[in-house]
Amino acid sequence: MSASHPFDNVPYPSVMVALPAFNEERRVGDVISVAKKYAHLVLVVNDSSKDNTAKAAEEAGALVITHETNQGYGGAALTIFKTAQKYQPDILILLDADGQHDPMDIPKFVAKIQEGYDVVIGSRYLEQQSKEMIPLYRKMGMRALDTATRTAAKNLETTDVLCGYRAFSKRAYSEMHHLDPTYHGCTDIIIQLSDLHMKFGEVSINVRYDLEDTSAKTPVGLGLNLLGGIIQTISIKRPLLFFGLPGFVIAVIGTVLSYQALVITAEIGSWPPTLTLTAMMLLVMGMLLCCVALILYSISALMKR
Image 1 (cartoon, rainbow, N blue to C red):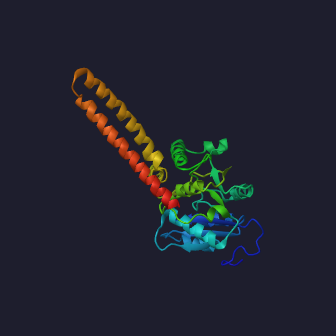
Image 2: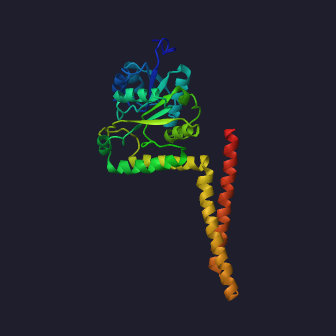
Image 3: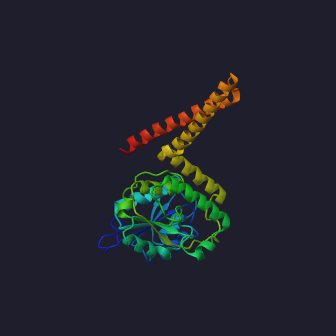
């Protein structure tokens, strides 16, 4: 099978499995060995690793693309999408290179895409056994991040939005042309494709939490990083929700307080200074937030056009 044309003479569906990898020389080879059983091509994007990740991946039989500088999850994912757009597999599957995701679940994703879904996300919540394996602090954090992501995305009903084990149809991955270069790219992918009204589905997976050194960041640090990215995305993509709604509520409160100040003034003949200043500040703040929301919404609409 030629690396330049890996899907020539491959019957439908042709499957490309891709792994973003950073310092994963210990486990990437094992993941590739299993993934090769279900894929016509395994791609590893070596994101400027300091160890022998590239060598281990090549020896295991993967096509390796190495970044000269570290570009983060979003940068690695974008390289994967561009490579898929070049080779044109019927199905693209992303999973982690650290061994947390089981490559034996790949057929589940393939089958789900064949049912007509554009994006299929692995879920740790569909089966009670896999749900019980998740540490409580992780479960609480993931639920909060999932809720925030659904606020930014449209018509997204999946139970495990942030899971990195995902499959994409040709229609879906062909639309990916830019991503946040940080780990925020994980949510950026979902939000972009939900904006394009892709059909989302999910399959049950098991994730290992007993592996050491699977992330350079602590769970708390990674969670805060993701939450910051989601909030940033909401503020840009949903300005009416992020700025407009709070601005409207604040302006209404300011209007009510202004009315109360007028009533008190009519009764005693002088303005209540604290109430009046509070009402004025809330009115100004509310109107300012509403103006910001309208301006950002207009800019966003122009960029989409």
